[in-house]
Length: 106
Image (cartoon, rainbow, N blue to C red):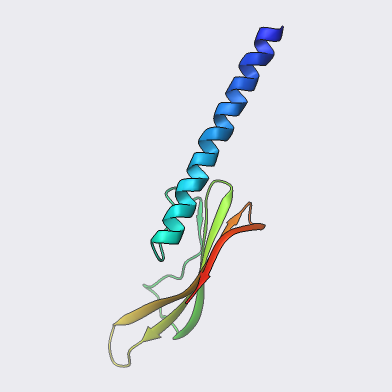
């Protein structure tokens, strides 16, 4: 019986270590690459650029495995043109959508 619990403990520890490495990689990517999307995206609430875009502030939110990445963007559409400029104003990396691990503002 002790062997079974030892194997279960090793499996749980391995899963925690792998998840910690994944979160660390995502935080480093978030801090070094402005506007990057997570490697695994479960839900995406970014604006649809095929529809009519209104100039102004917008928010993009990407949900992944146990964390969310949110970006505040400023969308500028040129008159009489299809050109759209998107400037990222800030971003937040939240663990379990509650704990802020990293954030930046431009």
